[in-house]
Image 1 (cartoon, rainbow, N blue to C red):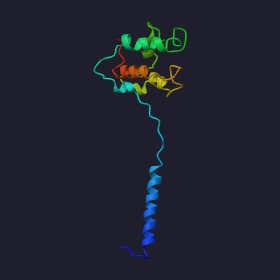
Image 2: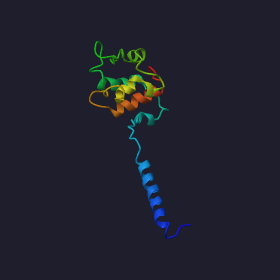
Image 3: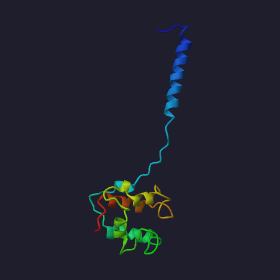
Image 4: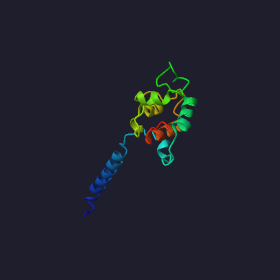
Length: 135
């Protein structure tokens, strides 16, 4: 119990506990989380490399990533083998695939150079998660 003499000490202690609680709760490091919309795409529908992924590469990437240009070669005839044989894709593991790290800017500046493309990232992420098949 407390009385009139201990009341100021009790109030001071209560105030200190509250200040410490607010101080601790405000010491949270901001973490940048990159969300992949592709993680939410339904994986029951298997994405086709030829029909879903390659057209995106043709529209967004092939201007720089062509035969004789920057690796990987994303031209229609070379894209799949260039990605898989060059070590850019870890099938079923998009988070550890170099391709996803480039697309999101984790490895260097985001690709395409115009900035991250949510549609491209979503489809590539899902395709890799599904096993990165040449279908």
